[in-house]
Image (cartoon, rainbow, N blue to C red; front, side, top):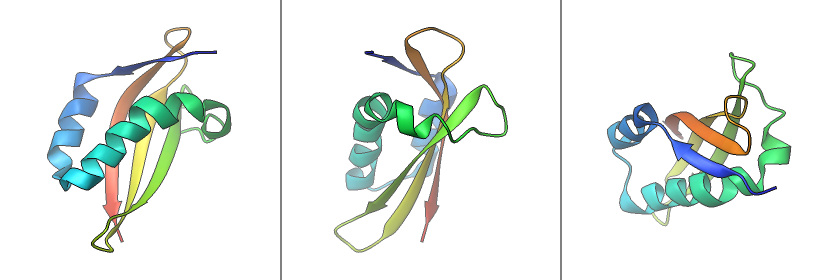
Length: 93
């Protein structure tokens, strides 16, 4: 089933506040628009604090050797065939 991604304004602002390097930002956007819908059946089992949302995680290692954990909170219950990106967080290792 093809699912459409909706990136809420709160998530866009959260992405902007992360201050990611260009390479990490491109990885994040690729993950949101390609990997989140593609890997839905696997990641949807990892529910966030709100059981209506799930968490999609992505580990990224940049060419500089810096490691990131990108956590994307996704609402899959509001609209059928749509995945709504609620929030994005980044942790550096």
